[in-house]
Figure (cartoon, rainbow, N blue to C red):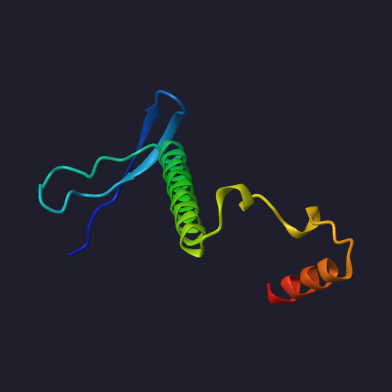
Length: 103
């Protein structure tokens, strides 16, 4: 069975005129599936992707915080790194070298 596709012009309140290819509704003969402005659809898709990206970032941050908590690292050390560690004595230099190799 061949379906007849009809092209029709629509006007989006935000993006102006656009042409849709209307496809017959599979369950309601004589009706077509409701078209969506392609620009609106693109914007909504990007918004949805951004929301998902932010949620993944929040989940990753929560996971990292849980890992740090399980490792027993105190909050006052969370933002510390090797760049701020000043090794003066031989023992300090050795400790820094061992720690950096470990990581």
